[in-house]
Each structure stands twice: as C-alpha cells, then as structure tokens.
Image (cartoon, rainbow, N blue to C red; front, side):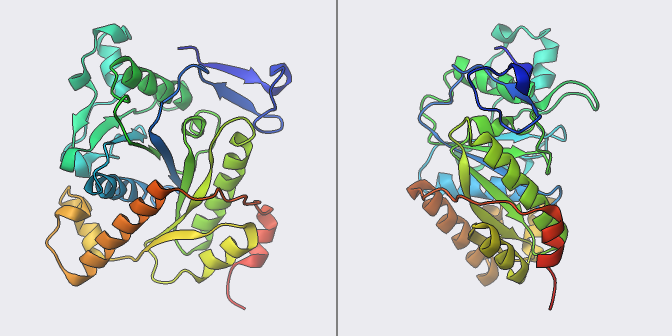
Length: 301
C-alpha cells in the first residue's frame, strides 16, 4: 500500500480536499467492499468508544456481522467488548519487522461480545508518523485475510476531534460519518470543525454526514439550535446515566449490565439507532458555521 502526502498544488486532475491542505492519499484500489461503513467522530472524551461499542453490539443483535476498528493510540476502543486492551496493528507489525505476510488473523483480530470482531489500529508514536498510514495498513490486512468479505458493518472509532489528513483517513472509506456531541459549547465547536472536514472529504469520496448522536446530556437545546442553523439532525439521544459510567468500569457493554427500566430505554435507543442506520437515510448537506458565529449562536438569551 502506498501512503503519501501530496500538496494541493500537485493534485492534478483531482479537486483538493481542502484549500491549502496536505492530504494523506490511500491506495485507490483499497476498498472495503460491500459492508456499510460508519466513522464515529467527536470531541475528545465525549464517549465515542462507548457509543461505538454499544452500537456495534446493537448491530450484532440485529443479526449483522460487525467489525469495530479503534483508531486511537490508547487502543481502548474495544475493551468493553473484549474485556482487555488488545495489541494494536502497529504493535504486531513491528514484531514481524512490518512483514505483514507473517501475521495470522488471531494476531490482530479478537472476537468480542456477541460476535463483534475487534481491531485496534493504534497510532504512530507521539509526534511522529501519520495516522492515515495506520488506518490504511489496518484495512489492507483485513482485506488480505478476507475478513471483510462477509462483513455487514464496519465502525471506525476515531481519535478525538483531530481532523488532519491522517485522522480524517477513515472518511475515505466511510459511507456515513456520525458525530457524537454533548449539549455544551466545546463539544458543538468541535462538531462544527468535523462538519468542515467531512465536507472537504466529500468532494472526492463517498462519505456524507449521517447525523448527530447526543451523548451525556439531559437536554439537547444547544445541539438543536446548532443543528437547525447548519442543517444537521439528531439521530439518537443518550442521557448522562450512572449505569453508562459503571459499564466502562466493569469493562462491559450496556447490553451485559444488570437490567433496569432506565437501562432498557438506553438499549432500545441503540437498537433503534442501528436499525435506522442499516435502513439508510439521505445525506445531510450541512454547511459549517464560522467560529465567531458559534459564539453568537449558542448560550441563553
């Protein structure tokens, strides 16, 4: 696989992803295939891994074959599914001096709760390398071992609100990008920047905005205000419940926790979200706001 940084001025015959940007270009023949692919973004610490893992389980409960790919050097995207921190793709490649042909499937893919297949792509050492390379190598390995042939759903759980060329790489594979946000200024500000990144990638790739997942929030008034302004919509709402916090501490998905009326509502919301995503929806042609305009929009009158 070839991964190169190409200045916009040299991208002949292609529209630039972003004016003045330097992009990570993946091998154009490296396609995931027939699976529906979702990339989950949002502000750091907003609950993307919790959301991704429970959404993966919800898809599996609907009878879908799911692969979740964590794209964070912390490699903790899938630990509630596998009950442990898995080695990353970069870790195992390093052990074989990057001779990928020496790897076995069990070296980098682990089966998690309810059959969800789990991969931790990891990331380069701090301050070095490119996250786009890591994503590309992960997809390449999955294809070489034919793990994507019978997969129905792929979920990329992406590091924080980093939207550089490298960590925007999952957008080059995704059908829909989902944004996890809380009902506060910082989360919505990060969401606006992610909308910008998705719009840039949509010039050259199939990815489109799928919608917003409101998380850790009792109310959604600020999210609703932003959505109405830019053209987004909320697909699911998960309040800040203690059972969600405890599920992480127990290294469990929400579908494994002791049943209660409030937990049942959350589980049903995940199942409803998975069913809606599987059914498909029209892309959202959102137009991001200027940074200064967000300051004027949000808050109380």
